[in-house]
Image (cartoon, rainbow, N blue to C red; front, top):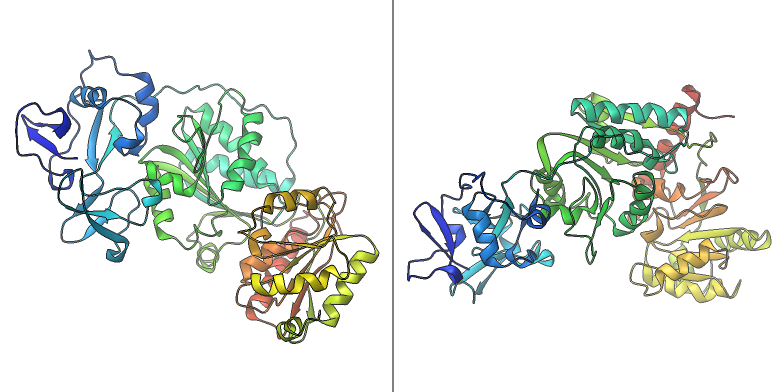
Length: 496
């Protein structure tokens, strides 16, 4: 699409009655909002759809004439999607890597047009694509206490909860470094309540859709009058406005200076930890004067260093709510496990470990670093028990298999790192095959270990790292878990 610029305002080419010299939005300089007309009554639906967002015209289910009328009355404005001032930059995802831009003959502007390939899954942003933003008043928020929860926090949770509330009030950033199974969601409740009572807008962002689907019903239950919106690819609510939004980090590409409080769960998880554009999106989506709360059980080395040097405000929860120590991994020699599996056999120590679990009828997860070798090994494990199954990210019945595991219908499940987080099975042991493989980072091994002993009814369990030589990541994971237990003991958060 092209725009005409005359009399200090823009007119989209389809609405231009007289022949002019239209230009692409990327080539127009003055894109400031027009003065607000206080006598105009804007559409509440359009206000809710656009507030805090920067959307393509294709994402706005309103007639172009209505959008233009709101623009002329100062309630929204057109902004650039891509700038090309000697260097290409996508203003939706922050991409500046030239190889992540494409060029095409564009039917909308009838020119060769650059577009961003980095965020194309959200709809194509090109040199002629405007991003439409709201510039009128924002929706009003409730200011009464909306929390409906009478649960009790552990001492460790309470300390972290107070830190989150303080961050909200003082507009600070804080990292909540909590062990797996510490109850991070409950730690947020008072901070969320404080923010919502102050009329602030809050976002809880997470890299994984599974977490959004898990959090949304829990937060709707404890904040019933707020009606939190869950945003992810394909979500029916992804264009809804809410004072409390739960979203995948990818959805934040569509937001600009929207949130007073930004909470990012699992900051160490893929793809957020590796994708700088998602990290950029988090900063773009929060207001300049806002709070940011980071949640993780396994902060990366950079965050850990910033905590130790005082650059990062943080609080730790080194113990689970049931006050029992975290299970410590056992290192066990597995020999040249790849060679043994390729010969059609299960390494003896691994075979013994599996047999003992089958004998006492205790469920187990067995993690593999590689799908191919896992699938090759599966038939040999099934000779020990025919109902042993495997699962991986591309498995079309992954959810069904995990649910069967939760229902105690599967004795042992072989898996890749896809189940390293987000799965809770009450009474379970865990083995890692080839724990020395580079796939298993410190973070991954800590998360995998965190599958064991989560239930108050079964706070103990076995976590075994089978290896062909101890790796640095294995040692760091062991020290990480042991340090948390020492912290918890020192603070009186665990019972011996």
